[in-house]
Image (cartoon, rainbow, N blue to C red):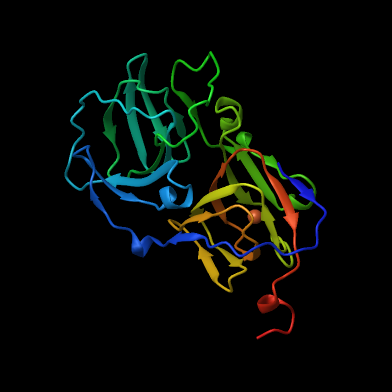
Length: 272
Ligand SMILES: [Fe+2]
């Protein structure tokens, strides 16, 4: 999943963009049956991607109107409940919790139904997303994936305490972005240790909790709904997490190098 490189230096301090569920600003969606809230990914991706959480609006029904979005990258992840969507070249498909859908650019779709507890995450590109993203010639219909034990592989080497569900987006996007779901398998004494990555990360907590320390001295609790953009080369450590911890992670670009670093002075053993 990642290449751990030999290194012993600390990296420059880079500041993550954090949004807790309590800080969410909900507003009406263009679909009358939903509300939406921005998750701060635009700021965390230098304007290349937008992420929104959407949720069912009480008492409202889908209008069934055909729509399209002029975005090179157009992705949905179902957080809770279920949603049924029809596309112009694909009959109605029902997506349940953990399902994903990547839609070809400009494809017409209409939302037919969703459960009263439906929550989803929509991630789509802006004009700043690299225009040379090449999709497979087979990508003419929406690509749908579903959650389940079969979808996960155990992490390699030192990451064997996590399992990962790769959504296959790196190949589809010419390595411009990668998304996986991480689930804890067991606790690891001392957590991940201090490290940084070569690429930017966007994380959205799915279940359980984890503590994320960053080298500006902040300690962040990641739990359901926590949205966090971590810039490249931002040193961090996950010293503790619950056994049911799960997180959605997007990498930009898809290639990942992980560099082990020394703990910052503020977090070194004995420091107060
Ligand atoms: Fe990390």
